[in-house]
Length: 103
Image (cartoon, rainbow, N blue to C red):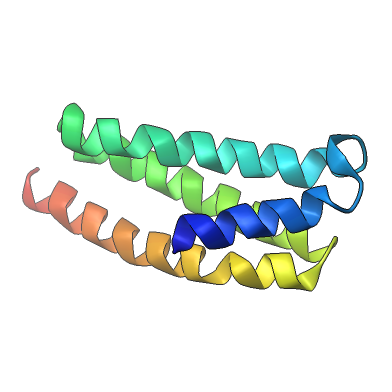
């Protein structure tokens, strides 16, 4: 459901001018997707919860920046990202707890 909402949010922004007019919001979206994609291999594959925590903090900041940039285009798109940032907030607390317990 989160990825569906994220995709709809990006689509809503893209329909308001494509990459040419929405370069900054859509670029931020790609950055947070990249950080999202790197978290799983760091945490589960490499067993590096400390590095994964650093990644998830950067991801949270990128999602926040994306949400703000999307809000400047359409508030609906920004609202669609709220469940995502809420989930990442929860996951970051778990990541931090696991990292500290294993240190």
